[in-house]
Amino acid sequence: MSESLAEALALWGLPAGDCTFVAGRENRVWRVETLQGAYALRLRRPGYRSEVELRSELDWLAALDRAGIQVPRPLPSRHGRLLERLGEGFADVVAWLPGRPMGQSRRPLELADRAGTFRALGARIAELHLACDAWTPTPGFRRCRWDAEGLVGEAPVWGRFWENPTLDTPTRELFLRLRDAARERLAGDTPDFGLIHADLVRENLLLDDTTIRLIDFDDGGFGYRLFDLATVLLKSMDEPDYPSLRAALIAGYQGRRPLDLSHLDLFIALRALTYVGWIVPRMAEPGGAERNARFVAEARALCAGWLRDHRAFTGGGEA
Image (cartoon, rainbow, N blue to C red):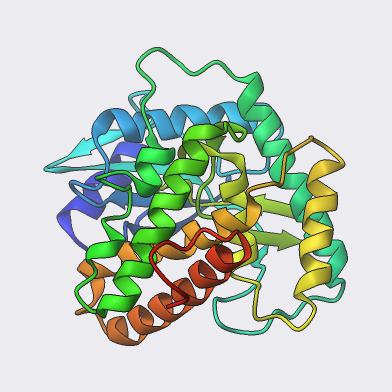
């Protein structure tokens, strides 16, 4: 057992004997079993989020838990703090939520009631947004911003996707045309904006009978509400019944909360582009090159389709 892990367990008074390592990509996560239930102990990746951003995330989760949203509830340390400093990094502990992931990326969904699950998911996302709107963040609250600047500005949250070194010239030009068109659309309109999860991939959606729980708010922050729906839909486009899943997700959301869908397809394309930037510092990881090629191809198809459908090409035909 590492010194940092032992120190974190002691700070929360958690037993070392029932501690199992479960994940190690963005944060290092252990499942800890106690008589009171299971918890996730997270050693946060140094440099990824500032201390104020991490504290803001935990305050946000606590508020959502109080509002009845099924999210990981933060557990105070023995000193009464939700976040503790450990060397150059930080640690926190949240409740381990029951349920199984809705699915895995690039694998067909295995759901007994596919449309029903997506309808319930749409309602859950709407409830999340309603709870966020009803909450007044604490003074000094700070999270990343998935706004126009965070998506297509000079320093996007997940990186300058148009500078991915594997892009050929036609693809780079296509991405830049989509970027320009998106900046123009977002400057002339104001889609619904507020706190969002920002990473509603299948692995972050836990199914427990009819209950859907949301985990991993690591990238959550201020953004367009369409971005949350776009993430779900982007990861489901290969499903044979995608049109019915899309319709169910939208119906579930709008049954709880109104939302203008005019720019939904644009946000699906923008969501695809974020991965083209995200993968750049991860290309050397096992499977990184294959993931990069997949992200680029997916974004290229979506950008070309949106630009064609909206007659937004400049300087020639399709790429």
